[in-house]
Amino acid sequence: MTTGEQYMYRCLQLAKLGAGYVAPNPMVGAVLVYRDRIIGEGYHKKYGEAHAEVNCIGQAAANGLASLIDQSTLYVSLEPCAHFGKTPPCADLIIRHRIPKVVIGCRDPFEEVNGRGIEKLKAAGVKIELGILEENCKELNKRFFTFHIDHLPYIILKWAETKDGYIAPQTPPPPEGGILENPRAGRLFISNTYTNRLVHKWRSEEVAILVGTNTVEYDNPELTTRLWHGPSPIRLIVDMDLRLPDSLNIFNRQARTIIFNRLRHEEEGNLLYYQVSEDTSLVHQVVNALYQLKIQSVMVEGGAKLLQSFIDEDMWDEARVISNGQLAIGKGLKAPKLENFVRREGQTLLSDTINVYSKQLTG
Image 1 (cartoon, rainbow, N blue to C red):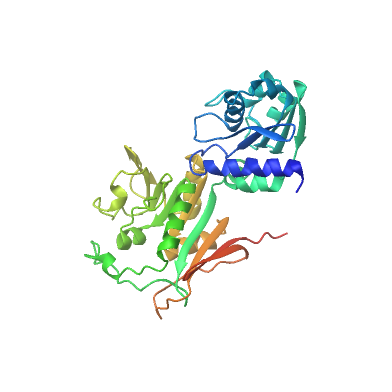
Image 2 (cartoon, rainbow, N blue to C red):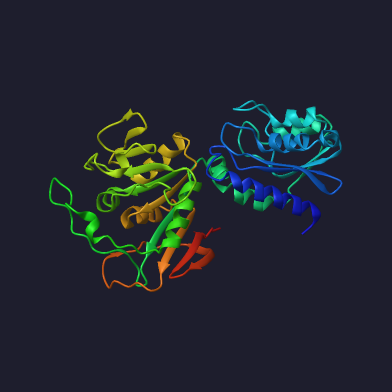
C-alpha cells in the first residue's frame, strides 16, 4: 500500500463512523497532511451538520496548526461539494484556505456536484489527484451511488434459517376477520444473542426496514435498534387490507412508519399510509415509492413470501443469510432461494454462520 493509499484508507475509516447518521448524504472522511504528518482529521457526522472537510480543517486550526494548512495536502474520500445545500460548498472552503493539493477517492455522482467540485478547485489553481482507492470509496457509499446512478434504493435481503433450511415453523392462519390470540407463543428464535445484536447494528446503518403483514401479526416486532446504540430505521409494513390492529408495536410512534396498502393514502404525524394498487407489481411499486420518498436503502427482513418476491423480481443488491448450524425443525416455512448470486464474505458467531451474497452480474 502506497503512502497515498494509507491516507485514503484512513479517510475511509473515519467516514464509516457516520454510518446510519448522514443519509441521504454520503459518508465522507478527510485528513490533512503536512510533510507526512496528519495535522487534522474529520468526517461527516450527521446530516445537516458540517462536512468532513470542514471538520478536518477545523481540527487542524483548533490544534494551533492553522499556519500549516496552506502548505498541506487534503485527502478526502469523495469529491468536495461545490453547491449550497444544508451547508456551504466545501470547495470554497478549500480555496479560501489556499490548500495547494487535494487527493480525491472518487467523484460524487450527485447531479449538483458530479465533477463541479473538481472543476472549481482546478480553476482556482488547486492540484487534483483523483482515483486513490476508488473502488473502496465507491463500495463505502454503494447506497448513495445506487440511488443517484440507478435511481433505485439499495436493497438488502436478510433472513435467518435453520440447519435444514426453514425460516419459521408452520403457523396456523388467523381466524377469518381476526388475528391469532397469542401468535408469539409458537415463535422460533433461530439466531443467537450475539447475532441478534449484529442484526440491530445492521438496522442502524440502513434508512428503512421492510416486513410483511404476517411477520408483524405473528411476531409483533418493534423493528428498532434497541440492542444497538444507533438510530432506528424507518419502519415499512406491507398490509394491503389494513388488518393489523393499532395495538401492535409498529404503531407505537417510536419511529417513522409507512404502511403500504390498497385502501388509504394519508399521513398522521410520523405514520404514513401509502396507497398502492393491485394491478401491477407490488415490489416495483414499493421500490418506486422509496425512491420518491428519498429513502436510499432498505433492509427487507421478511417473511419468506415477501423476501422471495424481491428475489423473483430480481430487485435486490445484497443478501445476508444467517444459518443456525445446530437447529433443525424438520418442517415449517422454507427459506427463500437466491438465484444468480455470488458469495462475498462470511463469518461465524457461535452457532450461527453469516454469509453475505451479491447478485451475479451477467454480460
